Image (tube, rainbow, N blue to C red):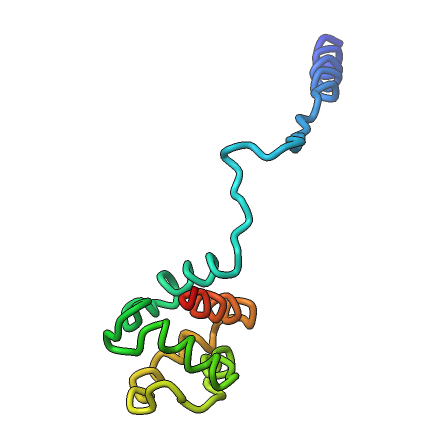
Length: 128
């Protein structure tokens, strides 16, 4: 009888446990991440997983052409940087460097269209 009462008491106590409900704050706090612009996301990919920064700088030619040169030429020719990064476009900036860039298509072809569009936005932002 004591075991039955003890078991009943434990079950009653366990069933009364309140679930903790997490409430979302009404206003963002300072620790919350603010949405990034496409240019900021593109810069993050450019410097991070894309590793584009290894060959390209904003305002000077290193191994590959500068972002300013790329942006100007693609804008002037009304061409698509995204198409080129997918490996579906002809090289128009510096065709002599195409073989070097072709090795990087493994990285860019694995990116989503949205990621490539943010990279393109970052490249075009170098014209500002």
